[in-house]
Image (cartoon, rainbow, N blue to C red; front, side, top):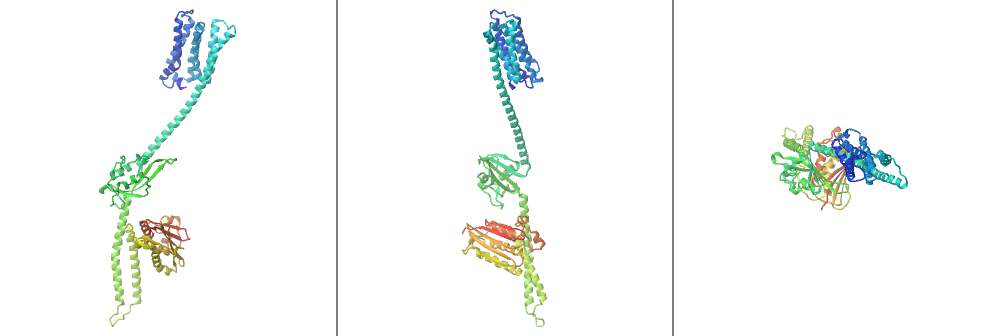
Length: 554
């Protein structure tokens, strides 16, 4: 037991001496002091002095023998030596001082407490030895039952106490074992937790993502250097109570964002942020970031805290800006000479159609006219493509909304699509789910452009002789427009990229279908500017359905 174990250091001997041997030594000295008083027994009795010497010797052995280097069972010799000393003292003093037999309890308890079942067996034999040694020394045996009762009472009681102590010691050993196991498990869990903390910290400081965690009381408990750098650029200390700065602009890089609408205050209010873009920092060090936030709850629903993650997208934003500038520049540079080409082409056609001098016929050469028509068609096609490029750079313009009859808008898109569909023997049907007028607050020019792009796409990828259906429905506070075709359809991989700028499906590339891959991108941007959405449902060889959903507030 730890109470009576030496341990691994010499200092442990002193602890064992104080806890196990000192009580017997003090009791023995007390009995010796009583024996020194005038009694029928001479204090100088060799047996009494021998018992005292044995107890003193055992006490000395406890202190000087290097028990920490020996097996724990080796120390059982000390209480056995004490038993011999107690037997000598009791044999001499019992007739005049019966309580001297109580010294027996000290070595017996030590045996029972510290040495388990073997200690109990030795303790029983020790009490028998102490009781019987008196009669051997006196050379007289009990004469009647009373004498025998006096002989066995003390050993029996002491053995009973020893058994109780042994049971208690066993329970303590079991409890200690459980505590040791629990402590080891706790130590291991603590070590794992510390390792995980170190690993998490290393990961947070390694990744190029800003991460911050606030507890349920909106106090910062975890952040990495990237998060602190973003906060410093924005103009505030991430560890301070106010989590907003004065150097924060919206995605347009022009409009300041009020403190209460910045990332951290919104997240701490419980808003879930997704792809929230901000520009932070002074003009010479501005960085763009996109942030997301989420609240973390325990299993019982209690709020644990809020986590905010932000990514530096400055390089991406600059790349997009350069791309937009490039598209705009190229489109304008191409459109100017093309305008001159088409203008002079019209003048040339007009000149050829005017009546010539009397010596020349006024009719235009059919071959030359055919060549001019080809040039005109291709010039118009080229202008259309340039217009698409220009439109792709203008999708961020805010819509100019006004009440618009959606049916008339769809009718115009269908009429425009029939010019191409008729040449492919296709049918463009306008289907109306309700006879009621559907008036929606929108920008008719831009939504009309989006509808034309979607319908033209359906015509372009549908086989001759098929039908393109256009339908709409205004109910439940929204307007829904569906354009379905019986074309080649798309797989999942194609659908995931169909709205990407400049994306062209493998079918479009194989069949050399004309276009830049900007039509659906433009349509989605226009619909998004109206707080709407556009989705696609398709499968290979089963056709495609594009659905546009707009808020219906009028």
